[in-house]
Length: 354
Ligand SMILES: Cc1cc2nc3c(=O)[nH]c(=O)nc-3n(C[C@H](O)[C@H](O)[C@H](O)COP(=O)(O)OP(=O)(O)OC[C@H]3O[C@@H](n4cnc5c(N)ncnc54)[C@H](O)[C@@H]3O)c2cc1C
Image 1 (tube, rainbow, N blue to C red):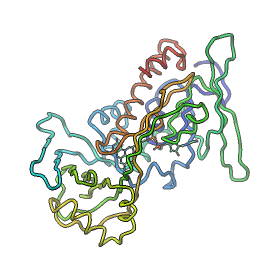
Image 2 (cartoon, rainbow, N blue to C red):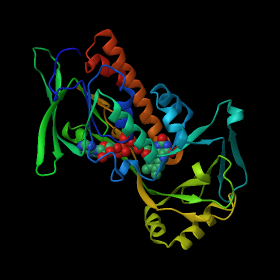
Image 3 (cartoon, rainbow, N blue to C red):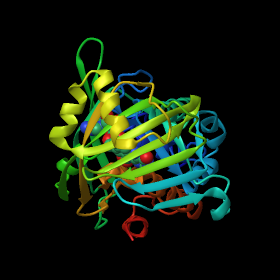
Image 4 (cartoon, rainbow, N blue to C red):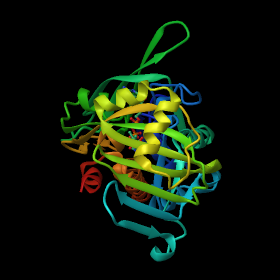
């Protein structure tokens, strides 16, 4: 890591500055590694679609991962704790209740807006001297290069296209490791012919943030209905994040309703546990599928986050799983540097894949 390098040579190139890619860069911000993050959208604006109005429910384990990265203190002001979980089945008797007291933890989880997480990750990346942000920029070619007589490639080269003010600019970057964090339509996977399996649920998640008539008292509600699960998650400012899973055609119908008609349908589905729902914010629809990459590593390449696995939001696990990828990969990278090992070697990547 000590040899002099050009500004096009890095230890790690991360493609995708969404929540997973940005978290990995932040996890390595205090390391000796020189990191490039290539992101298709400008990160410090509302144009970045991954830093939108959606929320994520973070597990207590994810809080600990952010704590270890030194970021929980800046995220905590935006987090609403989940103290209780209330699970019911519409039309059936019986309720399951979980509480932080029963489980002996400070909170069962935390709800944060993607936008708040994105802004804090962006600020941390921007302040880190070992991180170079290239955005808006896109990857357009990847090549695993053998510079020596070694059997395995010893470098990965990435051609990046940046949208400059005048003309489109292309440059070639090189690194010991390329991390694909470019989501479930991963360009890196396509360029490297890495396949995936995909199961369509023929369901979509309609999301919106609402203001309930009563205090949410830090209760997360998961209500199973004949159309799919409906979650109300406690947010700051006594708002609730709604994730309503329905057949895809129905999601489009709900999206088209005016606010009063939409609130009426939502109230009918959820009931009155939180009183009369007063208002709803912008609605968005996400088609749902289960996707899994056929391999999580290739020569000088590791996949993280949605590029490696996309899951149904019913259990709120997608980003929590991504953070586990981040925690493991960053630990392996830091240990490799400490031991003087090659961070992109097959031995290191096999530990990640395992
Ligand atoms: C409705 C819904 C609710 C959810 N709720 C939860 C929850 O409660 N808890 C939870 O843990 N998870 C939840 N998730 C899942 C979570 O949102 C995702 O797991 C997480 O956002 C994935 O992040 P990512 O960075 O891997 O992928 P993405 O968010 O897809 O980011 C990929 C990034 O790569 C960039 N990119 C793409 N192609 C290129 C390219 N060629 N060159 C450069 N950059 C590129 C994109 O611009 C983007 O910024 C939910 C998901 C949905 C749909």
